[in-house]
Amino acid sequence: MQIPDTSATRILVVGDVMLDRYWFGEVSRISPEAPVPVVKVGRTEERPGGAANVARNCAALGARVALLSVVGADEAGRTLARLMADSGIECSLHEDAKLSTTVKLRVIGRQQQLLRIDFENAPDHEVLQAKLADFESRLAGCDVVILSDYGKGGLAHITEMIALARAAGKRVLVDPKGEDYARYTGATLLTPNRSELREVVGRWNSDAELEVKAMRLRDELQLEALLVTRSEEGMTLFADSGVAHEPALAREVYDVSGAGDTVIATLAVMLGSGLSLPQAMRQANLAAGIVVGKLGTATCSLDELKQIN
Image (cartoon, rainbow, N blue to C red; front, side, top):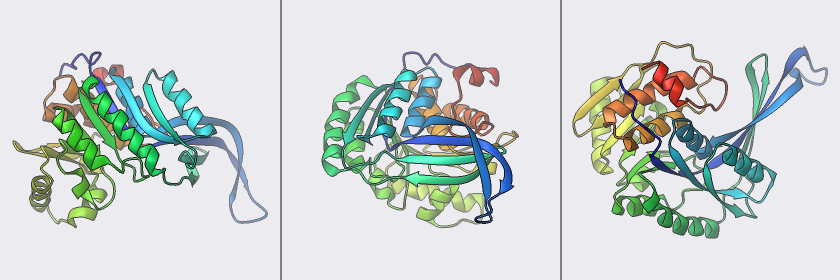
């Protein structure tokens, strides 16, 4: 299908940001100190993660993007701000002196992830309150809002954010986390993966049972739609118009980290550019198929999407 012009589409991304660090090296021996591989690091790489990766995916698809989040007053926060500026993304990263910017360090040997080390703590409430005022002031300048919840505390006021955005007539797409979905009430669309949805509605034994549970949740939360990403089973959209499904693409899966970021970013950009929900889901499915073939948190460019349409 024809990909719409995305150059005028404006996306506001709010949520938990993090810095993904990769240490790549060779493994040639086992440590004499413990039965673990010794990795001789040959190169390092830094990439935006979490909501920052969502914003980067939106920008890669040609949209104009603003990112709103909280970071620590530290080296990792400064690095993240620089990486986002390099991607042409307007950032409002509120600093919290008591906060350590979330860092995920991955050690890669022979193209396999050997270890992940996380550095994080929760943000200060006052900084979050200041972010709420910033959020409200930015609503007029966007077409679609993405709330990217990684459960790190950056979206303490998400219920208020949804209400403000909906009152301003903006679509609100949420990537949820945890078991308390009541806080997402009134959003346009939620994008849980299969395991995240199971935490909230319990297990299902058939597609028919899944439909009943998904539609019930959609009604309870007053959502326009619920999009469930289902790994090898593709993705399914539950909306007023009924159920639509996109099968998983038969591509080699290299790394699924960050695929959910690509899905919600593509949905937002395509919806903001005029596509219907089922059409936007199809593009999100194609984009996800591209990024799972790449190592680490990655993006799908507009050119890559056009090539497979």
